Image 1: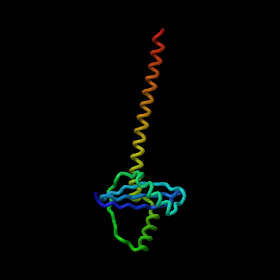
Image 2 (image 1 turned 180 degrees about the vertical axis):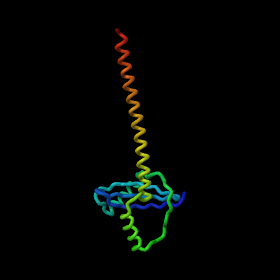
Image 3 (image 1 turned 90 degrees about the vertical axis):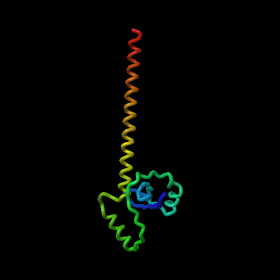
Length: 138
């Protein structure tokens, strides 16, 4: 097993505070999104990590490069400011979350389709049974 690196980014997306957990493992990135609601305090975030980290459902892994170089704090602030202004395809974490959402959507569609087919089959059998009962005695 290789090196695992995790990070949490808390951002404000109207009207809620969102936490994006990123996990880098063996050169692959997987992400999970958590809605906090009101602005979480530091101790609330820490408590959430301690109690619920292993309950998180991470997205499928996406290939990504891990950069672990230390940066100048001012340069880091400029990059953060620039990333908030850049609206486009999104970050790799957002892409991974979108992939997870699409997979969940397809699974949900398949499950509901199966349920509809089963219900239609049940109703058909019920009709056939009523038909036989009416025909049997007369």
